[in-house]
Amino acid sequence: FFQGQGNGRYTSNSSALHVLLEPHNLHHHSMKWLGHVVAPLISVVIFTLLPPVKNAINTTLMGVFRDLGRIKARKRRLANSGAVVGYDPNVTNWDILFRRDDPLEGINFDDDDKQAGEKTTYTESELAEYGDGSEGRPILLGIFGRIYDVSAGAKFYGEDGNYHMFAGNDVTRALSTGCKETECLVRSTEGLSKKQINEGKRWLSFFQLHDKYPFVGHLEEESREDWLEELIESAMKDKGEKGPPIMPKLP
Image: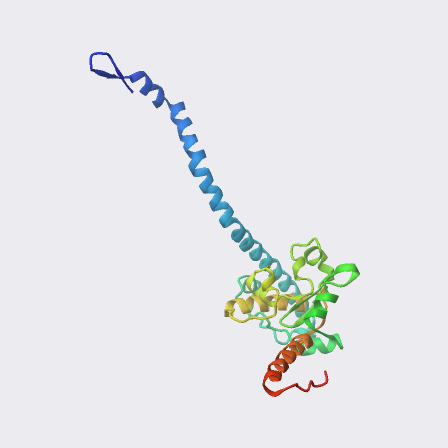
């Protein structure tokens, strides 16, 4: 902004300073700074936070629609004089929506199972094979070891649904935590908080009371395959210490 005059003196170039300080030029330089610095930072923040935020929103919305379904099922059961016993009349719809209720209040699984008749017991591999919804097979999912046919909800659990990964799995951990990753598609509740367990129980209530998702069986406590694998592993250890093991007959 200073120019030499040939006599060793410098004078300010006020016209150049004036041009720089004109509003439109200030705006131009500000926008360049925003474009080069702020925009990339915002992009990083968005791409970092968007998946967790989106997942949290989806989980919340799932819970709301689930509890609306539970309210509808509760009203249907209360309208049936034979199903009134066990429900707390002081529990309101708002209690259910704000999750202040007992998730399994009013549900008698033993009576419901007797009415449903004899059911199948599945191993994990059988559930995956026969309940994946492919090639005309039903869409089955398990929660807390109870298996439901959710074929009527194919738009949610079918091949093109947002929860297609649930098909053929016990999803207790997934629904308790809102996690849809492969490692969450298991029955285990190890390490979960009471709040998370109750969230899972609300989903159990939802499936148990749903008039289009029939209960069809149980997941075997310990699958035959796991039992056999552990038996062979134990036998191999014994072999190194005590000689060839005698394998028992399979049950």
